[in-house]
Length: 90
Image (cartoon, rainbow, N blue to C red):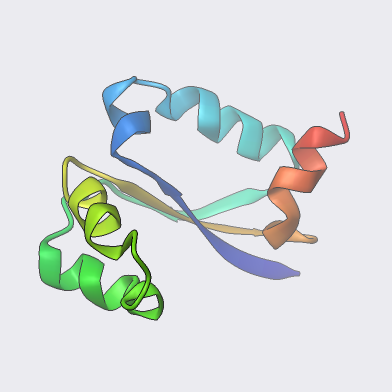
């Protein structure tokens, strides 16, 4: 059993596709363990994406992730971190 983090980013929230995304997650056999909506501030986003600090896209990434609400979702299931590959195999 694995756990992973999915973040529905500001564009997904703005486009109102939250339900579609969560349905795909559940259809893939994963369990939603925790979910909430929040607005990241620059300091929190900076800590979360610190691994990218020296990369040229870092500032635009922080700007994007703080541009609107995000929805972090804790998932659990067999091969939870392989959600993209599982979805493509259908």
